[in-house]
Length: 266
Image (cartoon, rainbow, N blue to C red; front, side):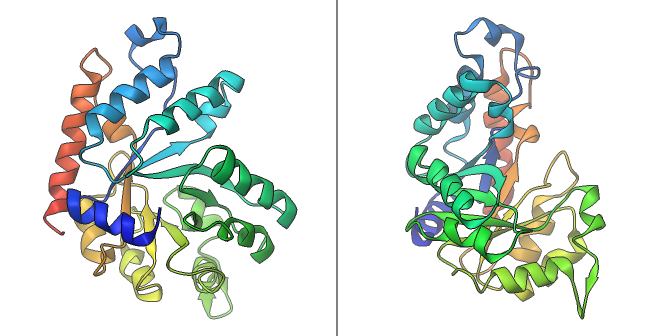
């Protein structure tokens, strides 16, 4: 999916919502466990309930890989079910030497046809570059994350910059605003405006809203640009809005509420 197509969906739906399909067999409603594929049955209902309010779905591959071959099949069926006008993210955090990254890129861009994949840039340019060689697909590189442990390395002083600033400034030269996004955690409120000043035009994938403490208003006010320029991910706050038979209805209502909050800024 191209940048212009993402922007078109944002303007059409007045939303920058990305729903995270972090589907855990231990958390989905008990009545689904009798299904042949409980994970897909859950995801299908969530997608049906939220697709009018979201412009992206993020599939955290760990929740599927943990279930072995059956999990990969659930992931593939979920990906195939997502409407083609909605941006898809493989949250896999891959990154390795060049020939290995090339195989990872083929996995998520050819075998499974995701629009994007998250990338850990620790190994440098040759580990990121292979993901940027597929037209119409995106690399989403970890910039500054919303977990407590991000302080261990990302905020260390590196010359005149903190390490996360060096990552953002350096990696941004490896691709373009048409194929490269960055993960920017929403709980780092003091840094949102600063990160936008460093990269005024790139899209950001912003986790941390909802269960992790971030909020839509702070994110939008500090990171939106003329094209919106952000995808706000919410996982638990949408997909686990209810654990009962009304789980899909409640998920749809939660997604609608987020969309309404976002619409005020679009």
